[in-house]
Image (cartoon, rainbow, N blue to C red; front, side, top):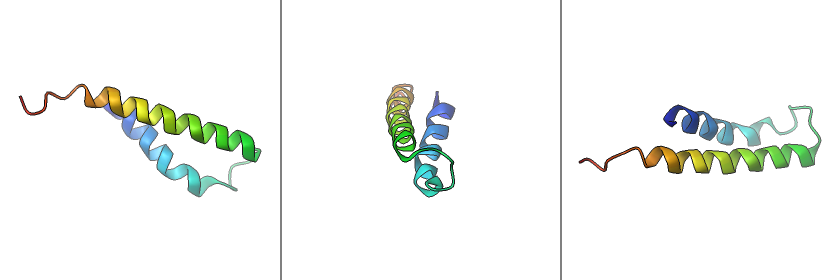
Length: 55
């Protein structure tokens, strides 16, 4: 899960820089970007639950 969280976070970071280079309509690109942000958020929450807080 940590790998997925890292990949989605990297994609979340890169998407604003890809705007205009990816041949997608603006509304579709915005929707996909929003889904990526939401998925990255969820993956980070799940990945954080795997830690024992040092115990």
